[in-house]
Image: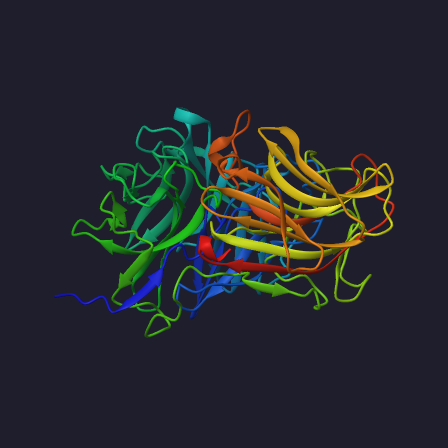
Length: 523
């Protein structure tokens, strides 16, 4: 009888961390995820045991690497691939509606990384493969829907210049959106693995193999990863990457979604981990509708640790950030590249200062917004805001944001020379003021609470007695509730300021930001 003595919790990266890609360098594992319109881009994590991850930075953290100022939500950075070869790390990705496909390099994954090196071909989801003979290949998605396929070509890794013409090597299993292709060489055979079916209920991971890097590839007749045929708390599984640990065990990281009963999730697509087994015919198996990818995983061993060292999905950002450090912690991210002078940790020591720009939360532009990913359905976020010398139309507060079309916020503003607390709900692009109340104070405590049903927006003048000013349903903030444009992101909880049409005259100061995670009745 096999005894699975070690356990770990899925997802290993809770919250909006989709499209994971992973490498091992020595005893360390590194992983990156998609970031879309948020900056700095491509969060990078390190782990010794594959279950517990620490963010060590962002790959793209300079304007010279990435300009997202005019990028709409759910555009920007798609599906990065991380690779390690001869002491150098490579991250290749796509800047959608920007510079296209490119890669950056470093010897230290914590950064800094190089400026972009462009590659000429491919739609989205490029991947790098370093062959034993020194050749380097780019494998990338091309086409749309049922015409989606993978192309491949050789490049000069020093310059990104193509050394061969791209050829079609993989058309998947006949389903739509063959994407996220990765090429591997394992035991002398070339394996091409990709997602299929689109990132929803039909999502799956498929694989083929060949004696040549250009194929033809024999398609394995069934998905190697999917939950599309079963009732299960984790759905939409796919977009995977493989890694071998120092024990010779194989693992897969991939995206999945924890749906609530009504079939949506405000958390978006998260990163999960599962062991890989190899069948007698030499194919890697993860979970083809067997239900073995679970929230509580039990395995024979994990690399780097003899036993489980955590009790649940990691809370990367639980607790209070007092803004006492000279730099923002890695978990914070801006909405697009922040405008110069729009934020500071030194203008007022121990406070985060935001200066509202002309763009607001409904606009595509440089919004003064800095946030963290929501990682748990039941949680609470608090802050203390001081916002004194302002003029009519200016506001600052705390926001639960999906994109321009969907966000809830509670804020302090000035209207007709009077200070007001307001709660606003934006659903499917239409904004409505839920309620407002006059206040005679320049400082106010603000709070957003969430549960399975929705979000509550509250304020307090003393931090003890809270007044709920508004409540919005959860589903309108989920990626599943889009209207005109698909949404690929989950909710971020952020601090913001806006001049609502022109730069603000004053600045908003936030003393701290606190995240509390708990059961619904505890919030």
